[in-house]
Image (cartoon, rainbow, N blue to C red; front, side, top):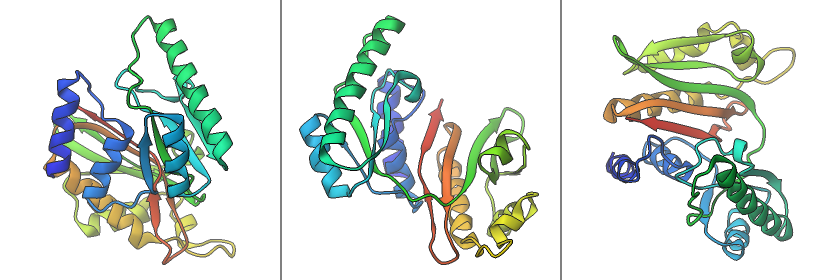
Length: 238
C-alpha cells in the first residue's frame, strides 16, 4: 500500500492522471499480482545490459510523463531477441517520441528512457479491468480477451470489494468459460491463478480508492498449475 501511495503522490506532483508502466508494475508486485520480469533504462547501453539480465526476448516501451498512449507515439518494440535489436529499438523509440512531441507541439520528457520487460509466452488471453461509477463505486470486469471482449462483449462485472466466491463465479459465468475449463482436447487453464489476480486487483482498488480506471490487458493464463501473468497494465488516477 505504501508503494502505491508514494507513486500516486509523485504522479500528482508531475501533473499526471496516470502512472507510468514501471510504476504500475511496482504496484502490482506489491499486491502479489504476477508479472513478467522488468526494469528501466535511460540509455541504449543500459537497455542492452538490463535486457541481458532479464533474458531475451524482451519488449521495450517509452517511459514519459508526456505520453500516455505509447503505441500512438511509435514507442513500443516487441520480441527483441539480441543486443543489436535492443540498441536499434531504443534509438528508434527515442526518435519516434521526439517526432511525436514535435507533431503535438509539446516538449516530451525522455529522461526516464524505456521500460523493459520479458516478452511473455502467449497463453489464453483474458482481460481484467476496473471502472468507477459515480453512484455505485468501483466495479471489476472480467472476460476473455480479443474478439470475445471487442466483438462479443462477453464480460461480467462485480462491485469491489470481491470475495473469492465472487471471483470464481465471474470466471464461470462468461459464455466462453468452457475455453478455460478445457475444450476439444485442450487442457484446462489455471483458474486458481486467475482468482488470485482478481482478488489482488480488488484489494488494490479497495485500499487505493483514488484509482479511477485500471486495465490488466492482456493477462495470459496458462495450463492448470502453470499460473498466469499480467503482461500490460494501465492505471488512471484522480
